[in-house]
Length: 286
Image (cartoon, rainbow, N blue to C red; front, side):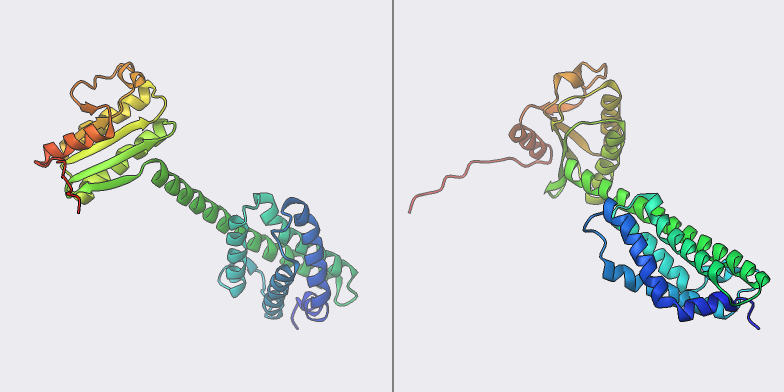
C-alpha cells in the first residue's frame, strides 16, 4: 500500500477546492503589493497544474528521497518557470516564496483534518509534503535569482548602449560618445567598449566625445587616460572632443592626446589622420 495514500486522496478528491483556496489566499496577498499585475484566472490554472503534478508524484510513493526525485520531475520545470515569471514581474524575493508557502499551509490543514490513514501515515505525509514543497521553493527561488541577475545585466547593457554609443563614421574611424555622470564602473565599461570596438572594426582613429559628461573626478580621469594608452597599443589614435576643465585639473596629463573643442573640428582631424578631408561642394541652381 502507498504510504502516501492520505495526501494522494486529498489531492485527487479535493484538488479543485484546494486550487481555489490557494489562488484566493495568494491573490489576497499579491493584490495589495502588485495591483493589476496578477490575474486570478492565470493563477488558478497554474495552481491546478502544480496540484495535478503533485498528485502524480505522491501516487508513486517517493520513499525517503523526495528531493532527488522532484529535481528531475516535470514539476521542477513548473517551479523554475514560476520563479522566472516572478523575476520578470519584479516580485520581491519573499513574495516569490510566499506562493508555495501558502500551499504548504493549506495541505497541512487538510492533512490534520483528514480521517483517512493512520497517525504514522499522516505524519509521514506531512514530512514528505514539507520536503517536496521546500525543494520546489528552492528551485523557484534559484531561478528567480538567476533570472533577476540576467535581467539586471541586460538592463545595464542597454543603459551602456544609450550612454556610450559607438558609431563607425568611416572605414577606419570610430566615434564614441559619453553621456551623463561618470564613475569608475562606467569608466571601466568605457574602456572595454572602446577597445572592443577598435578591435572589431580595425579602427585606426577613434573620436571620443566627452562634451556630454558634466563632471570628472581623478579616478575617472585615470581610467580614461589608461583607455587612451591601451587604444594606442592597439594602433589607434585618439581624438578627444570637449575636454572639460575638470578633466584637465584632475592631475592627469592629457597633453599627448589630440583634442578639439567641437564635433566638426574633431571629425575633420580624424579624417585628416586617415588621409581624408571634408570639402565644401557647390550645388548649382537648376
